[in-house]
Amino acid sequence: MNERYRVYSTYLKEKYGEKVYKLPISIPDTCPNRDGTLGYKGCVFCGSIGAGYENLPASVSVARQIAANIAHIQPKYKAKKFIAYFQNFTNTYLSPAAFRTFLQAACTDSIVGLAVATRPDCIHPAYLDILAEIQQQYGVDICLEFGLQTANYKTLERINRGHTVAEYIDALLMVRPYGFRVCTHVILDLPWDTEADTIETAKIISALPNQEVKLHALYIVKGTPMATWYKEGRIRLWPCEEYVRRAVSFLEYTRPDIVFQRLVGRVPKEAAETANWGMGWWKVRDMIDEALVQRHTWQGKLCTYLHGKAVRKWVATEEESSKKDGEPD
Ligand code: SF4
Image (cartoon, rainbow, N blue to C red; front, top):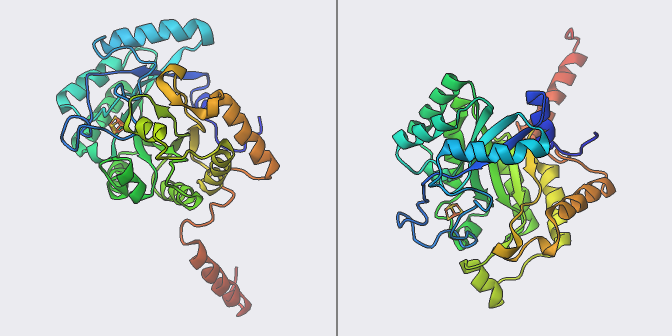
C-alpha cells in the first residue's frame, strides 16, 4: 500500500512479521493532577475514569486483564502477539516496587512489548531503570507514551495540565539514553490554538527523540469542566474541515520516520457531549487521507527545519567554491 504517512499497523507488521494488537491494562494508580499534589480537578477535558473506556477495572489482576483481552481479540483478528498498554491515568505515579511488579505480571508469552502512558513531569530515572531491567529480563520492547496535547504553554495553562512544555522536553531528554521508543499524544484542535501552534507542536515533537505520535480531535467528555464551558457557550469547537486541515499540516511538518498510532481519537458515544462531529473516527481519518491526496502532500514534506538546514546551504556553497579552486573530489 502506498501510504502518505507512517501507519502504526504497517509498522508493527514490518517489525514483528505479523499483526500485533495493543491490550489496554488498568492498574490502581492515579494522577498528580487529581490526587491533590498539583490539584484535584484534573485536566479540563479528562473524565473521572481517565482514558480507560475499554479497560477492565484495576481491581482485576494484570494477568487476568491480559487473558480476558486476548480471549476477546484473538478469535476476531487471529493475532498471536500483543503489546500490554498501561493506559489509564499516570502509570509512573506509584511506588517503583509496585511499578516493577505490575510490569513483570504483564510479561507473559504472547507479549512482545510494553507501552506505558504517563505525564512529562512524572518520569524519573528510578522508573526508567526498572523499564530497562524488564526489557533485558523479558526481551520486550518498551514504549513510553507522553501526554503533551499542545506545545502552546498558554493553552496548557488553560486546560489545567499542571506542566509546561519545559517538563516535556526534560522528560524526552531523560529517556533518550535508554533508547526506549517514545509516543506523544496531541489534541490538534484545542479551541485556543491556531494552526501555527499545530505546526510548532509538530516541529517540537520532531526535534525531540519521538518515534510515534497519537493525534486526537477534541471530544467533550460528560461531567468535565470543559463540558460545562461547552454547554455554557464559553468555548467554540473548530469545524471538522479545520481539523482535517491541521492534521495535514501536522503531517507535513512531522519527521518522516515518526509512526502515527492514530490520526483521530475515539470515545464511546454515551461518554461524550460531542465527539468527532458526530461521525465515526474512521470517516474523519478517511477525510484526512483524501485531503493528503488532493493537496499532493505527505508526511515530512515540509520537515525542512532540522539539523542546521539553513547553515548547511552555506557549508555546501563553500565546499563547491573550494572544488573550483582545484581541490580533488
Ligand atoms: S494528566 Fe492524564 S489522567 Fe491526569 S487529569 Fe490529565 S489527562 Fe487525566
